[in-house]
Length: 107
Length: 411
Image (cartoon, rainbow over the protein chains, first blue to last red):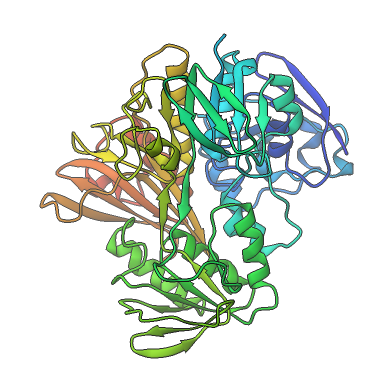
């Protein structure tokens, strides 16, 4: 049950203990964190759950597979080093302390 | 502070709750669900949920969110009658709820063939979680699956079942798969892809009497031959759930008729999602067209429009329709509405992708781009949506040139 932090574009922080085994998208939308649209419900189809993972965490996540990689080139704000789709990051205890920013917009 | 009553538990109801909570009126909301669970994601039900028996239902939001928002949630308690004069709704439990605004997001139910008995143990449909659990049971321990209907649900489940190692047959009475929804070229590709995966697809099928013993379907008559059936999925379309609305005297036309603000023939009652027949925006279809769209996008965007109407605004629903379907190794995506195939000025053009399994078909009416179908080409799809929304109409030769990035045509 890792503690994770999502920081909105205006600086508002949302820190909470997320369940194991769900994706960041599911945890965030389940807790009502604004700024993630997740139009396709987490199927790596729409690219509207874009998050920017903090530098220290980038290499600690399994790299994006091809569908996610393609979608990251289509997201609403320019792709950055830490850009990921929240629906493709599955949570587990080793991600204790995972921190991410939300982009200014999803589309 | 008049109550806002939402009847339904699907994507439209979930998004409407979210939009109204964002607008600050959560405490006025009552959500009335016939099902036992909070609204949950439907697309996984034909795919991950069936592939992996340990996969859980994914609620859009948890209990805590609804509680914190002040939403009163009624589960396993369907609405049974609307009293429009009194502006109340009676639930199955006997509870009567008053409303200032009522939103019907009742969705659609799976169509069943006339004359088939209810409760055949080896026959399933797929609309909701209960159905999905039944489909799981259907696939467990089965060696074969017969899918009746070559539409999106049938083909998604066929793809999933095949991936699980079952022998799969799809029986379709029309000349091609997805005949109501995609171009002939895309139908052909989908057919080839499913056949390459080892799925037996029968088109132009003629169905006769079924054979059953009261509890199990035993065989079908297909093209005059008796065909035994082990397990069967029915994917022959859906009927909008208009019962409540019809009994209350609202205008019905293969769906609850609404205007561009999502209001029904009673201004205090709105309808959204799979159940709603709405005026198509002239941006996407010929003037005067009405549509009933069964898609996640339509459910979400109509919910957003309804939220504005409830807050006293007058939105004109004009969201670009888009859709996706995952079948076996294919990710199909569609942006815009297919023009009627018999229109004389329709042309179709292929934009190649990196492989034969990746491409898009661009549909033009005259020189206007109106619809793009994509297979395993997510960038094409996302950029096509942006082009359509921006009202850009690049010449087909340019748009289909793989050396030209669709993104560059947005400028």
